[in-house]
Amino acid sequence: MPPSKSIVPASIADYLDTVAQPEPDALAELRAATAAHPQAGYQLDPDGGRVLRLLTELIGARRTLEVGTFTGYSALAMALAMGPDGQVVTIDIDSSLQDIATTHWKKAGVVAQITAMTGPARDLLDDLILEKGEAGGFDLVFIDADKEGYAGYYEQALVLVRPGGVIAFDNVLWRGRVADPNDSGIRTEALRRLNGMLRDDDRVTAVLLPVGDGLTVARKRA
Image: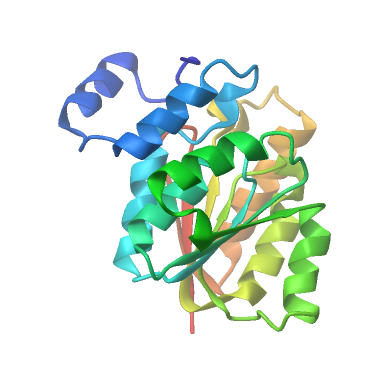
């Protein structure tokens, strides 16, 4: 398995593992299938998956949107949390891992509930807004893709999510780099900008959770 992205001390992380509810078998199997991939570290960590499933259940989500499919873990987590009447739309610029995702979605019995779209996320999100009339049509938007695009995806997500709905972002602590004044990398700076935007944005109520690599949850105000 890839090394943990969590910024929590190892001793605390080990304890948390002992009190966490078990990862559903379908998610554990997909995680194992992804472990050998060179970019396996891109996958949402189990704690992030638990938070995402809980958010889905808490708001009674029935339609969710994801930016960044990878091997399909977070889409599967949301589909399982919603049950058979839920629908997930997931977007990724790269379809090379689609077979892994589809195989595990089928095995979990949720493949009919997940629509996978391939292409630039900015364009596809605009299409959902302008061509398909999906403004306000989603309960939850989860963003885990190119960090430079986060701020733009956030503005589009605000249009697509309903009032009272939730937008969540992964990797917002960037393995602690956002707190390092000597790190001026493009992705680090993009995440700093996003974190500052969310702090100052009165359109949402937001909290940055030190879960995994940092998980922000923002609720769109009415």
